[in-house]
Amino acid sequence: MTFYISDIFPYLSKDCKKHLEIQLGIIMRDSSKSGNLKSHIIQKIKITYVDKLKKILMSPQNHVVKKMFLEGGFIEKTEVHYPIFDFPVIELNDYYYLPLELYEAILKDDFFKENRYILGILNTLPEKEIKYWKIWLEKETNIAFEPSKNLSKNRIFFYFYLLLSPISIRIIHQFSRDQFTIKECFSTLIDKYPLNLFNECFSFYQALQKLYIDQGNSTIIFDNQKMKLNDLLLYFLCGKLMPIFKNQVLESIVQTKELRDIEISRHNDSKSKVFELNLKK
Image (cartoon, rainbow, N blue to C red; front, side, top):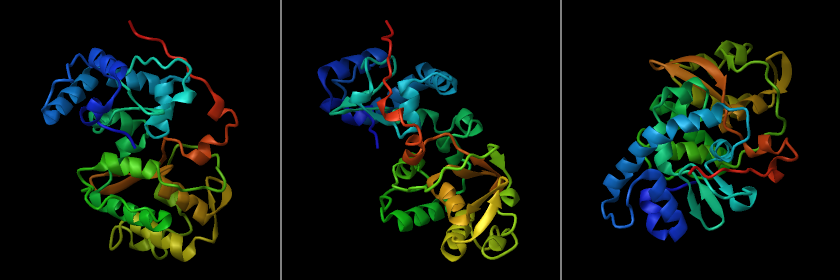
């Protein structure tokens, strides 16, 4: 989980405060109105840094900001060789964090939906879908989502709750495509309970949870490969496969871009990679 610059600023080091004020062009140390300050920071990030983030994410090159974004918004200091950023980053204790103002700035940007990032796709999900996804996650992880968080107004917090949930996948399957129909995902099950009640009585995630409990040990063919139904359903549970909704109707199933720990661990050298950053003068 990460932080708002406007909330955490008084607790940061002098160097971190100085870098953030220079990068954002805002004098924050004397401000007493954190609500207005948050809005100013969000607007500055939208204007100056969102396009930069898109270029970083689309680039085939390794970049520490891309790594941070894909893995949950933070990174250990030991993983960064030159700890100087040309991007607004919170430095606190042993970590660097992308600020929550950045996530506020990109929440409704179509780029993140069109390029299959979870945060963008979350905006297409009806609130009832997130509600039943939350119920399923809470049951399987035994970690509660904060009850004070209103789902419709706190999709960013649900996003981090999802990314940081300890869900393990036994086998990472290589899928041939990035997009599927619901029939392609569940061809032999689509007309059977509980999927046959999707759209009539159940939400999509409610039906998936019931399927996970009732029939998860069966084997199916998905994307021309044999796999356990439970494994496929775990992809949905952890957000590697997600439904895209349009006008409350499920349009397609897509693979998302954000990485899970189990996926990252496939690359033996991923934890030892060193990222070099250049200071923007």
